[in-house]
Image (cartoon, rainbow, N blue to C red; front, top):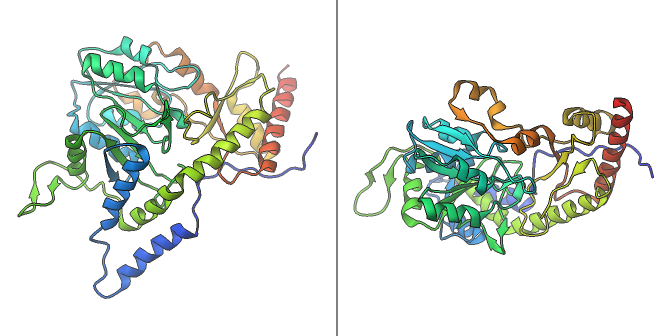
Length: 389
């Protein structure tokens, strides 16, 4: 079977932005132009936080302007500093690690599980020291991390676990939403996520009311609201989401399950189409609670003589199939050349960082897009195999 050449780009909008989202933003903008109008107060903030907490199964949610600032606030509340170590995964976006490094802490990388590509609790146990102040697992690509394993570590050691849930809106672990796990979870609503609050946005969820209040103060200059007078009791910053973003966040949460269901169906279909490609390691567990953020495959470098980068370039140049890399190992970024970190004993992550490739799967993906992408992938592997012999 052959296909006429078409373009299947890797979209910068991960979810769906529709007429109801535009209308929500427009209502806020229109109200601000009327006499006495303003972008404050923001009743939408409380509405959004309540809706998100319910969606993610947590007692509390605090809106932020990004997942990065949410993680930063959590590090500050935990008192992370220069004498501390924070354990995290090498296979993640850079801010999962730099939020700790920015507080002066030493970043300690532990290896990942080969099937989920999430941080491995067994590997974390080997890296715990008297200086360990926090553990930061990531629900990678929408696949839930081993929450039971990290809960056990937290109970036995007292070390706080802060989940990077940037990929994980709607992710479930053993049938439960993941927002109540650990000390807190930090979410992203950046443009390429399944729901977006006008391109940027984030949140912290937690079961701990005191922790939620502490991060809330960090995002609002240390203010305590309510009571007979306004008080500033903490050092804080302006990490708030805006009124239009919050309004759109409410419409996005309302459609989150639909977006995830569409993406998950497309992922399952593409996995079926690629099931006979032995050179690729396909994602596991995408039917069971997967948040359907990314469809990440690995090019098995034991079975091919070409690199992931050559494969990616060939797909783009010859077939107009867009892909992305999530991620190179964090320590390969230039910023880590000047930082103190430990990347020892991470062979699975080190290999995965050179093999992972995210394929173009979106809520809008058509059957034709998926069939063409699968065909182009198979053609590219065949052609590059012949070329490398």
